[in-house]
Length: 380
Image 1 (cartoon, rainbow, N blue to C red):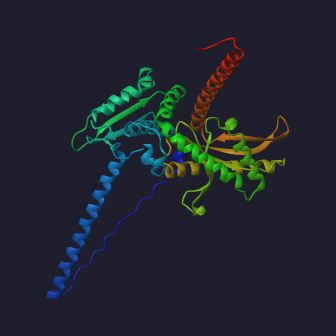
Image 2: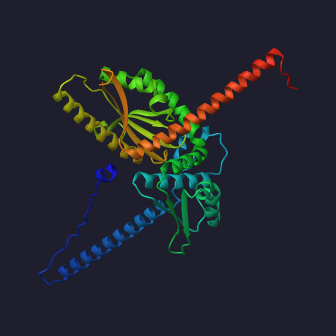
């Protein structure tokens, strides 16, 4: 997978300075040796304590009891505007399970683990750790009964946390479809925030001017035709975003779009020169590869930067090119890998199905109004 190839790890080494061998055996020397030894011992103990605290914090970060993904914890600034009444611990639990499974799918795995200890969850709305399994049984019953998802529960001890291990089938269409039906149900409180943010971002975009006129026109075309190229990703979450605030040299992405299912999509836009010839074609192919790597890079950065707000991130490129069949300029949205494409397709299919039902309901409602107005049907 591309993701595995792009992630690199670095290690840091801590070096302790040895005070060296002392050659003089005077009273002063002995005192100095004792002081140095004591200082070294104290430093070592302090480092051990810090390491222990860091390990405990890291362990707690892996426990769903402490790392909450409910709306209030994910977007604290929106807490006063949130009008939804819901169980925050249950929302956290379901979204974390969905996030773990989606992360596994994108890494080409078919297994994921969740850990939790015997304490109550962070909002004390789930007080009994046995209730976690019962709630998962209830919410994931469609996936479990259809044999798309399997899971095992291992009881822990006072020193070892409880563990849930999830397995899933290779057929992603049914699994993702049912998973997004569930995630959109529990992600629903986030959508009010996304709608408000979308309006603000669209207003900002209307006032924004890109350095490249052609690239700005291409970006505007994508936003104006978003439902065609990215059905289901109806919210503009951000644009021209910096991984580190006010420091574009650390990385600046083009667009991030959000969906009702909790999936974000990073899109990098590039205007290509459409002149013909083998040299120009090679240059376009190279430029396409570069922008594809950029999209993958910003996907990884968005996963980290917006960890609390999303369940997973996919990425794509939006480019123009010459359509050889029509002999005219055209535009294309291309996903960086097949898994991202599959996720987008399932979300798009779900969105179109909901839109069709909504339009059907509107037609029935309009038909009822017309019939009632003409006096053919009278409802008391």
